[in-house]
Length: 115
Length: 238
Image 1 (tube, rainbow over the protein chains, first blue to last red):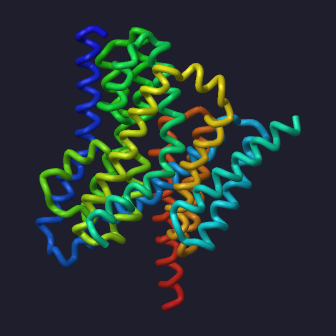
Image 2: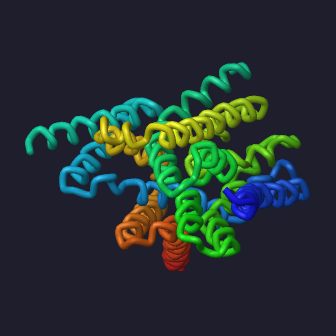
Image 3: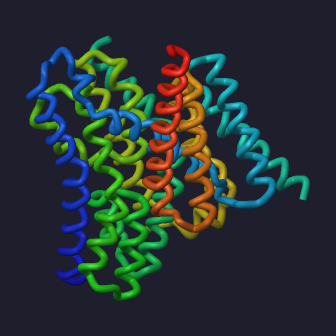
């Protein structure tokens, strides 16, 4: 790689780090100026709404299966249902994910065998 | 809970991320080598930029000879959504000089995990939990890239199904993180609309815009429903 490309890489890395770091420093300074007991209220409402909607958007984007075939979508729907059902039963983080991936794999293998 | 337990919990919480990170990192390593980067350079891109979509764009633009200033602008534009993550975690992060630097590990998925888990932990345990989860995610991304750069073609040829099945760990994780937030009609509508808009945008080929645009749509839905609720309550009072 040429020196110019290395410098471009470093600029992208530094810029990405600053995008993640500077807003945190800004909010920490903002919170320090406020009453420490009422820090939750010091958070702008739009910011507290934007956090769960960002996670929901990530969910929407990641729901699209790698293989966009009917069997891929079927596996996604069934695995999603199982994930939610196992979460309702266990209220844990790991087991629902594990069950969802297993069902997705099972449906994928079964649909491969049926072809 | 001891500090060691916080590290263990962080590691356990981050494990589902590996299912999503490793297959994508292997693809990245493979594509980077095919685009003319050395394995070492591909690993460095993953270690330093550490942001999935923008890394793919970085490689593609460099390979096609795009102007380098445009490569920087586009990479930062794609990563601009990260600006809302730090402020949302700020109330849960104890003061310390280390925290700003640790934001290097604040990916979409680590943010989603931390936003749910940090409020449940005591202040003294948060650093251990975050370091553990972020290091595992970062390490898996770097290791996956190295594996993809060295043996990506062979792996994808031998186990093609693995790359299709394991990425489901990410939507499953997001579902589990969001499920406790479906507490009211307002939040149910907001989150469902957001996920649907993101899905449609991605299917329409707007991969890079899907997350920020859908999140903004969701916020608009939230405010509209809130205004409606306030209006209805005011009418009932009269």
